[in-house]
Length: 481
Image (cartoon, rainbow, N blue to C red; front, side, top):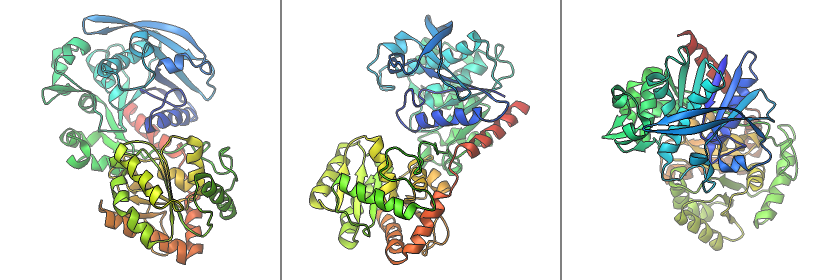
């Protein structure tokens, strides 16, 4: 099957968050399936263009009409990828070259990514690639399905389109004049993009895509409710017949405690007791905590943002430290008031709390490996990757049962003989603390059962092979339909 994937970011070339991780792993997983031909299309950001690790060759060029303007698009093929994925970068000095280096945040982001959506289709024509399916992601490529039906149907008569929502909070809003001045679409397509007298590109994608997916089964159901849908609950309810959820995987080669070069000791599901003990001792020393092997180390690697449940952690933190003999380690950057809180907490409990307000991938890996209990009380979480990373390293998660957390962390019983971690249903601090205390009791009073739970976590298959197979089921359904 011929599959074209369009996204605004993809590791290792350009990444700002989870979408970048998905676009590194999913195309590769699809390409490993016999009979597939996979193309990945990304913007040719300045940071990519200037990076000598990514040699490219221009293989085509196209002209992209943006309202009354015409813009150049170069099609640059990456020359050193060997996993079966062909990568094309869309080159535009105007939209992606003369920028600060950030992926998002420019005042003309709406126009930039509307251009990118159209340029992807023009580039496919220019290189002579007729995909069976185009898979596009989030608001930045949300114009692809609408353009495919409104403008390019004759050029791609058999191509079907899947639209995937990773983060519904950002929807691609623009003023009403954006429809004519930038998009230049036939008037009859205005209705599918119009919302509150403005243009909403994600709304257009939901209405025009042949299939809409999101990144976990539970989150697909949650998007029917206003609490989660950020105003699009009615639109998604009307599209419920074509909405489904596929839980993301993780890169099990990168996140592998047997081979991770960032770790001071390596281990697997059979040797983790000794291996994690070494990693924990080294981590405690590295971050300035007392080296105490039997004191549970609670860890969190996160953006310091409200929707990550940090308000709950702030609410219970002092009570937890007063009532329980434990240590707390936080890694991340974000909102000032959270950064300030954790710095103050560290000053108050210097031997038991460590706040690393920074971005450090190596330290993140060592935290996954050296921690005993991983905290993820997110208010909402479309999928979440950190809980799967933590389980891969044998660190037991305590999570709010929402979105992908509900799908990946099956609740353990009080003796840890079933399930994969500890969960709480209602989003409040007392329920979060109660779940933590259940986990701490298991750690302190039934260590063998806690270790059995750790081993069960490590044996889970969180690879991309299963999600890729589910994508293929949907692709085949689209093509046959």
